[in-house]
Amino acid sequence: SSLDSLSKISLSKIKMGNQIAFAAMVKIYEEKEGVVQEITGLDKVNELNEVKVVVQNIHVGEKFMFAKNGGVSLFEIIIAADTESQLRAVLEKIESVLRVKIG
Image (cartoon, rainbow, N blue to C red):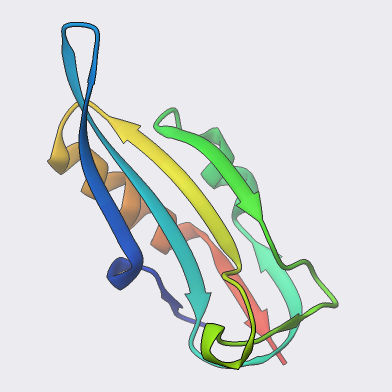
């Protein structure tokens, strides 16, 4: 399956003391509605140093629906990195390892 997250990014430049960092809150959706049968790669996402928070809204066995039909995102992930390019690399890594099977 293919995750559809890059269009759901809120990218911000934040100042922490004297440092400037880049942060993003990513909402991850699937391309189709249905019952979540399997989620893989979540452990690898949680291991990334730049990933600060992972909220899982839908679990295996639950129905995923598009927001327009009253549903919510599968995941909400907060990422912080020193540079925008580092942040985008982390987003690509998340998309490459996180897999959701919808039936």
